[in-house]
Length: 308
Ligand code: ZN
Image (tube, rainbow, N blue to C red; front, side, top):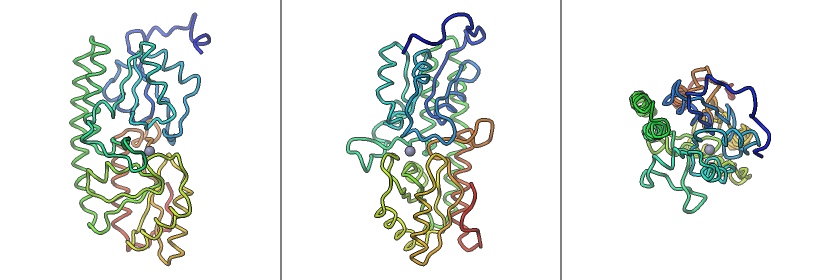
């Protein structure tokens, strides 16, 4: 797989003094952009709407990683079908950084409900944990590219300060939801860190991975929970099919209760680059605002299905 590719004439001279970094998800890629700035030539493998649990690296992806100075990924098995590639890159002498594994100690991780001795990988929904990831990445880039070490660490510190504000915003906004209505139901169990950090109960139709489809029993159990708790809105995710939650909505209806399908949340993928939700901060704000709106206006005559 190393034969074909980028030899010969067309070498890009402008990128020569920049370090090349390949990021897996666009959540990870956004952090590299924030901390690396212009000193980094960034390639992000997974775009908007891509489910990292199911993502298989293409031949081209492997070549891009093999040609990079550093590969940055989330880890904790988020990129479940790529796990063998990262040690392979290590063996080839490419620097690799697993943000969640490296920056979030065991004591702050949430255990997996499905896989014994594994952890929930979705650490970025606790903004204070993503702040750790930012500072860690600043150090990792400084080690990789000592000429720009000060700039990386400064950018990481500046970004960490912005995350502090975001953390406060999330905490204050979620707290405005009446406590009995503070229940977040989503397509898959991606939001347990958000739940733990900001005091909101969370339920996913699918587990912490999207590997297994939800069965009829899962749909009925969740529908019963929603009807019993009179939850006004449930939330799809941009990187997971909405069909499962539509089945839940139907099952809730057959129990004589109406639940809205709210605007989709950014779960494992951010929005389009160049739009507000194409950044982590923008996507988290969107999620928080969407959750607050969906769980506080149960009396209004909102349509049954809101558009994304
Ligand atoms: Zn996920």
